[in-house]
Image (cartoon, rainbow, N blue to C red; front, side, top):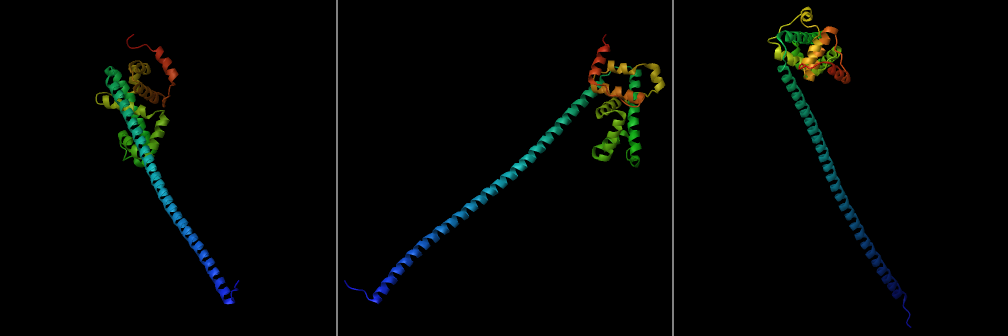
Length: 248
């Protein structure tokens, strides 16, 4: 068996070392490629997640816009429904006012209460708004101004509360005034008492539309007692049972 020289042994060791180094470099290169693939894959996943997040944000914004549009539609529908209901009520009051079958004297008495209440409301508003006396010369101007002016609206609501009235009462009284004001006459309190002893009975017995009846009855209460008193529904029903109809 031949013995290797030192140089040959050194060369052999270096060869072995080179092979091991190459093997390690190969493994390191493979690991580097794997690491690059992992990093590249992570970047792609992150970009995909960003795209998904952007889509989710866009969808969320669209849903918010849809919610706002839905709320607007609901508000418009509610406002439209209220407008239609208000118009229907006003149409009923107009029909009821035009269908009244009072004598000229009875109509004048009712007109007297109505006009006095409307004057009271206008006067009281001006007392609370002395700076607006010139710009609010009529009750109609007050009714128009309160729609857009919060301060006027607040004063108007407080005046109604003082007299125990509601908006629907004023609507009924204004409708009566517009329908009959051009041909009716104002009677003073002593004249009214001389002609009709119980105007409340006359209104309850002759006026069938509830809103118009309520408005006229409260107008009488405001003038005669200073404030309208709201009658509970159960008491109103029992009162109707005691009053004979016009046909009896």
